[in-house]
Length: 213
Length: 213
DNA sequence: GATCATCCTGACTGACCGTTCAAGGGCCGA
DNA sequence: TCGGCCCTTGAACGGTCAGTCAGGATGATC
Image 1 (tube, each protein chain N blue to C red):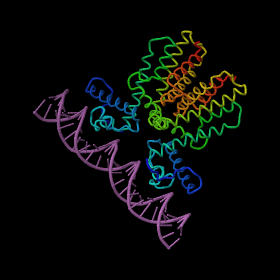
Image 2: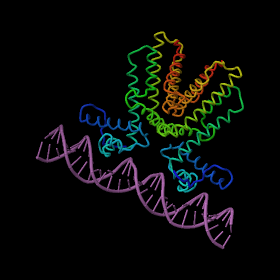
Image 3: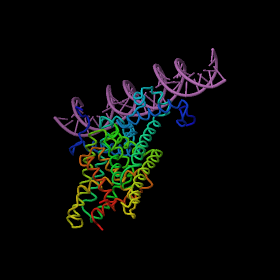
Image 4: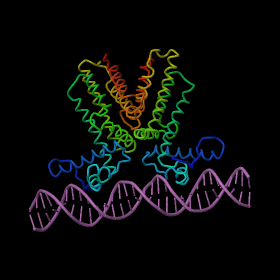
């Protein structure tokens, strides 16, 4: 609690190049491992081995295993949303943007280790259920996600493609929940809810609610 | 693997009264503990303590910790669905039945330790993501849940309250996913998605899709 | 070239916990 | 009354890890 022997990971110049890359390496390795085998089965020694350092160094940076894993969870999800925001910032028609969003949600291997992402979600939810701090984090992330949806829809309203009296907030909440629910099925390989079917359902719902044909 | 020193938990008469109650006691205690503190933090010793027996006896019945916890997960969810089926078997109009379903999904403390149920779900998903056998189980459960929804809707069609050309299967999948997604938010105490709002959204969606006013 | 902070390590330890084991008590059938 | 089976236990074993510690290397500062 008191003093932190580890780098503050804030400013820019000093020896922080090594520091930041170290931290980042560990966070990435931890996220990978959580995705692969689950948070509960991820050991400090595993993370260290993957980075190629001694376990003691991991503790030097993060003090405690829990801090490391939670940071990794947070970091990874934040990255996901940041990527989503980036992807959607500029381009595309309303339809394209909705498709991108859905594509992203059900991405199978967009960046290499993506099926793993699902493992992260389940662990994040699980952790959030008990750790209030993690829960707060997750809420913020979800708020951001819904905000993203909302902004896209509002842009559609501004362009006259969507009726002006649509309840954007309710749509965002509903659609986000639907995407989450479908994601669970897809992640767990439910034969009844394949990836393609989930995408179809999600897009149909959005198009219908938004009045796009 | 080979021989099972523990009771088979099958037939009816013999010393199986003690056996079955023991088994049931342990399963219940395990489910409670998983709900409270999570599967990862549930120890054999905890389960034993709650039942008031020695840890060795737990192993005697279940051989291994993992077997116990998975059985507890399975047992608890199965119980949930059985209760749902029972509740909906006889009574009510279509609207009532839909409401019961939603009520059940977002039940806060219908039977005492219900908020805990959410903890079980997250752990079930997490476990299913890696253990194929658990995944198969979960799929069956979900299939049952969707089947329940489907039967209710079909009854509505038979009674002429729902259009005959409704795609029951797609509705079931979609609504089930929506309920799951909303559940996550409610379980994680998202201030934007309160229990009441989730119920409202779920019912509105169903009524609209089914053409009930 | 001495001092000091940062980064890093190998070796260790202390706790926790799943699982095993040897044995005891109770009950039933012969 | 004996033999045997089912429950049950206390005690102990053994493995696994998170976290500590004493120190070593490196490089910057004065």
